[in-house]
Length: 113
Image 1 (cartoon, rainbow, N blue to C red):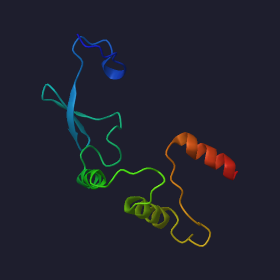
Image 2 (image 1 turned 60 degrees about the vertical axis):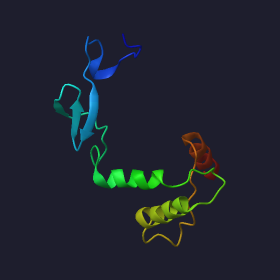
Image 3 (image 1 turned 90 degrees about the vertical axis):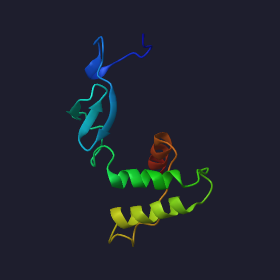
């Protein structure tokens, strides 16, 4: 007997559907079936998109450091954010500040207000 309290689409079933994989817009189930992922859990690119898999591999090869340390991944992310989100607005956008949590980001936003 499982100690998992199930919720959602499979709540109450004697033998719930078990997702064992996914690709594109599909979930792969333990019984071999493929179902369209209508839950939007795969994100905009879908499950196992090659670009996402490669980005995760690159991130896994990057050292994990404390907030206080500067490292190339953070510097590159700040540059990428500025280029993507603020292209043409560089004259008034000064810098990027990454936060460790949503609470920290909210505190900073309130402080800036």
